[in-house]
Length: 271
Image 1 (cartoon, helix red, strand yellow):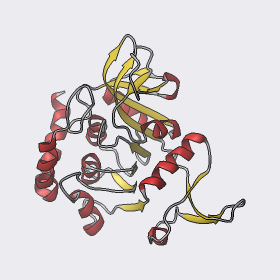
Image 2 (image 1 turned 180 degrees about the vertical axis):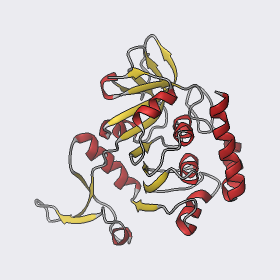
Image 3 (image 1 turned 90 degrees about the horizontal axis):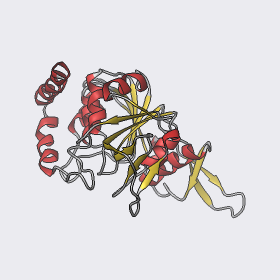
Image 4 (image 1 turned 30 degrees about the vertical axis):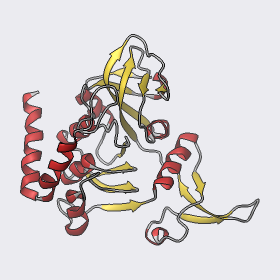
């Protein structure tokens, strides 16, 4: 049952060292404020899960929070590489990073299997690629009915899933709309969940294409206006393209990143 909490308290209670943590949002509604709070609380040895790791995962990796990354694509959308991610892979800074790489379809099906209480998912995919050679969580099987060769991937069940949404009502039911990814499946697959929202309202007004996550599948709701920036929240603010471009220079250089990290940690003192 959803409880309203301060973001700092929610992260402290739900995200522990060594946990498997999914922070989902596809270009839109990325839970940046929650990711920054995880960094401030200096969580370590996390297995980070995300279909499309971008700036927030570059920051978490550079801050030394991550031991492993389970993902399907990583980059700074429209700009280029994630340099803290690359530094961890190529040079082990600030610590070595283990990776488990899948396709988008593979990751989406893994979340769906986890949400459905199934041990694995079956899909047409990975044929003709080398991913199965380097990723132990990809297997192949023959359909018992048609004999078709199919790929199988294990379910994803994060210890905690974190998402951002536009609003919640006072009971803790959460509504999100616009360009969506696998937020619903990631929450339903997780053992616990945290949702940050732009605002709390008396009533959730139905909108075309909107998803409502009922309060009984959510552990904590934290009010965090602007909590998706520099990504966007449809109906609230636009994507800050300049911030994505500016991150390239910050993330590219260890000293520049360290100064950014110091400034983020300093916000903890001033809050």
